[in-house]
Length: 476
Image (cartoon, one colour):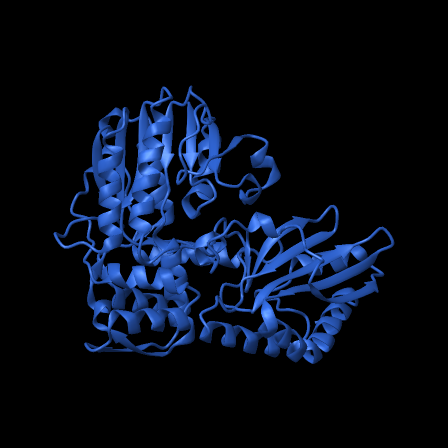
């Protein structure tokens, strides 16, 4: 079958792609930016990639007409706290317009469980998208999932952050809300199982794991699995806004995502429809097993995708492609260069920078800068990096975003997503003489930008010089 995979660069999209290829399907990946498709070169050679922005007016002929089935994995919850529902509705309507030009027979949509009358804005938006997609000229299959538990998922990473950092928690009352977590492996099984299955046409199904748990129980079971002490005290006076700030400062989530999550956490989401398990013969795993499999992937450095690498974890709404050409006019620069005796090893260290590896010099200063960034509404350092030694264009790397990563040419270009009065780049480039060039570029915004640069200049001198020296000399 020829399958259109929308949201191909998202958390689910990256994981379902190799499964579809293993079943010998022909896959067309629809992404907004081809350079940001974070998959290895061997997978890219097996697929067709098209650039489509479903928030813009449809362009006739942009999607192949001979599509047999499509996965609709487009969500905008984390991009805004106000109008994400309008964006999701617009994307769904534009998707239908595109599908009207194709021979698509089935569309599969991953939604959220909606079994209460008073839904959060997030879940109401999901339900509205379902209604829009049902108007399409195809057979729709909707899978409604609760919290997805897997390495790199936003829910898992938030729980992980909370339990690993806080042995004592004073929590809002929504921690007693019931939810229905499901392992990412089961989600993928259901998504693959309904493909071209006529028993699943024109219907919506709830999917959940073996356990119905409160958020408090999920935290406690995580702590038990990790052998961590955990004491939770619930108070009824914590407002949604205060709850959002609590998540924002303790975890790696963005404030926009925290706001929308808190809004949804007050609503009970429990699967009451288990028909699909019988239709497909799938026995969902329990929460503890889902945690165990997530830990295995983390320990083996095999996390395939992370929510933090999507642009929803960014504080920028703009297209970062415009920043790939580092400016020169009106910029302030710190340039360092040093000859590498072992250029291959030096580049390996460049490619491993950030996250748990750190920045090779003055890590405590980088951490302080990250805390200051969080206080002023930035992303901080808590995003880390998804893989310890692999970098793809578009990846989050602490409070940077990867604009270019060409190991063959020996060039890595990062753009700052921290709060600064201007725009900042950090570039590493190995030349033909095995000299590693490290350049920090800052384009200040007004007088405050220049004051910021000159205030930080003494720190820049020894931090950047020490970082380059330790990279080249293979020192920690």
